[in-house]
Amino acid sequence: MSFSISINGISHDVDVDADTPLLWVLRDVLGMTGTKFGCGMALCGACTVHMDGSAIRSCITTIDSIGDAKITVFEELAAPRHQWCGLRGGIGKFRNQLGGIAGRCGRSGFIAVGRIQDFLR
Image 1 (cartoon, rainbow, N blue to C red):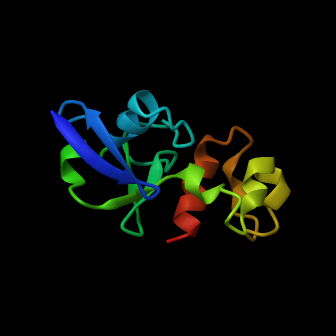
Image 2: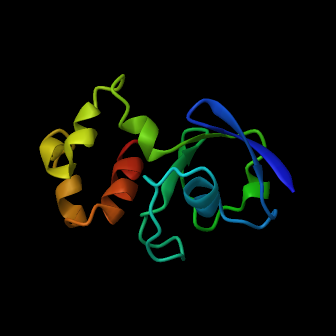
């Protein structure tokens, strides 16, 4: 099926099965790899994105459940227009700005993406 979704303010048309998790649409279809696969059960937060301003787990959110919602993914938060642009420089660079939240995520960066998204809710 064909779906039109808004990601970071840009409309994307994708042709996937209705039950495809948003995570795989982002990563495999659109090539947006900032959102990570972690546990696949919505427990770890690595797949966190924002849907209309609320943090959701994209590994369990199917593409057909999004409708007209606006999705914001990690790549948008790292864009230079945000005061967060330290994200491009690595997790350690802005650890103090987030009150240590990134420091509790380990060094891999997988869980850090979800923790930063949760922090912004």
